[in-house]
Length: 392
Image (cartoon, rainbow, N blue to C red; front, side, top):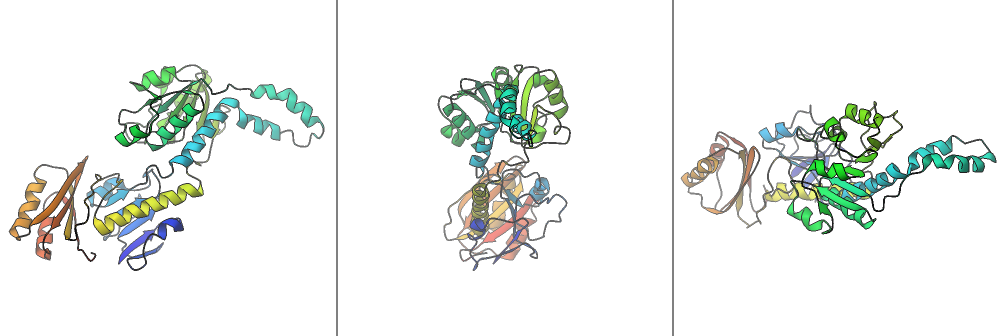
């Protein structure tokens, strides 16, 4: 029986995929095997001793102590693409309101409350203050061509925009989904220099924090409109305010507003609504639970942020799972221990990602606790699990 702790409300469509004969789940549960989480801040949380995996029902993992988890051999999953359509629709809305001054017009129209029969005349007189260009035929730069970026690029092109994308790390899967007529830029500078509209779709990390800064604003066209539905910290706010004052940025639409931006007329602040749809919440929950089950029951990893994708079809044999630091001669230390115990390896898969590696080892016979202790004692090994054909 696996124990799963839910730190946030998780969609029933996901939880229903956890069979009661194998899983126990609750918001309060002692020493869980796994955690399902959305926005709950786990950064200062003491990690349970038995914890094997954390599944984030969403893309961002800033609320999870990923480095600490890696050191303990805890697999952290996210759900890239599960909320992509919900975010994409909001980005397209942001594209329109960045251009047509609809947001400002609505706010102004509400100030006419109580004017009675004068309202119609006042509306006609004041509407010229809220004119804005059409998007058709304009150049649209999409920075980051992951699941959301590809959908945004394709739909913007369908709306008649001249779309160009930039992503030096684009996956093969994403490339297959991108419209063949979307242009690919050779550099970020060349993309932002030509774009009338720019949409950001990259993860936040040490390399991307503040990537849109004074240097990048200096390259942009005057009057550019920027959409940020990825992470607020991708843009340097002080440099943004200066770019607005200088007329470089006409409108900035963000789903991650901060206090210093809320009072600016050229900023349209949204309260992090990108994935706030029932469909997105259900999709994320289903994806998170399926990934968690595949790991707990089979040892397979898909969509982990700290360990590599590693999948080996179950063969009905005993399976050993080993997580370790990605340093030389780890396999050379692990396999001799099995040989000493006269354990034959039927199949094996080893993958690495950054500082860590993961191994799935199918064996022809049971393994005793003595050998398991020896594996755990190997310097650099952070986790050892054994899955038997009839369950752990």
